[in-house]
Image (cartoon, rainbow, N blue to C red):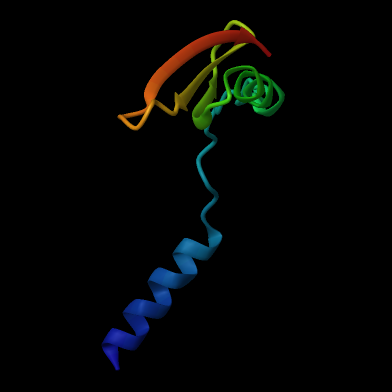
Length: 83
């Protein structure tokens, strides 16, 4: 019985307490642009197969394509193009 009273007393104490004020700065995220159009353009120009496309922080995209070889391994080409 005493454990029930102890738990009830602790719960009542927690219910009445307020949360401490925490100063949290606002979070601002810079959204990366979409590189799909740039990737499609590079694939069309090279005739290759898209391997990866990622935006950079300066408004450009790094596009990597695999260009099929003459029966050998494909050539990996990476280009940096505007978004």
